[in-house]
Image 1 (cartoon, rainbow, N blue to C red):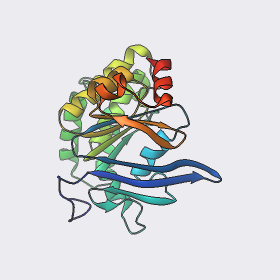
Image 2: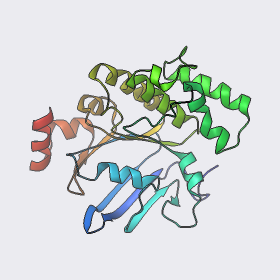
Image 3: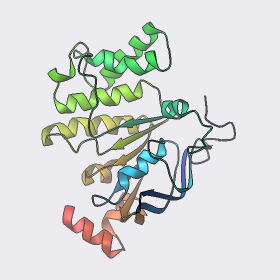
Image 4: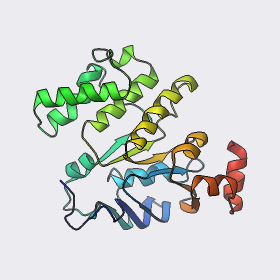
Length: 252
């Protein structure tokens, strides 16, 4: 089910136009615009406090906006009449913190939303959840509780849980930031495989090697504006703006 009947796959699946967002007197987003096509992988990078996480939280209406427009499949996200549940079924999100239910097994965590929110058939949901756990390479961990899993494994359960809602777009907000270096790779491999399967992915990340490898397009934000954007080869090798050059020199 599409959010809007007027949308077609040749249109951007996510369209952000001149978005402004403030928290009190602090303007965090100062006129952000970008279009994301179905199947694209977009990486948003930039210093802390540049508005990256706020932006992707606006895409699935976790944050409201003061002005501008965000559409997903042609539907205005900040239309008061929009069913947020329908939106969040379409737009999955994985956070820095895994937010798993500690008293539920990995399998139960993955099954919860389709059962409780979508009221789907339990046998169908369980079959799908088991496939997703296999997809994120956690076969054999179905009955483990979060406390029995490493951080990287918990984050992969969180990804499977988000995929259980069968979204069209996945948002990833610094999903490796809280992980040990050795577990970062297993989460990035999972996201890379999702991207290879054609999932539209929007990531806020500090993992530049990963961005270089998988992104179709990279956006560099600073102080609430998009400073520069381009394909990875152009962006990393020929950054034009001094702010981008300085940022890249510090992290590469």
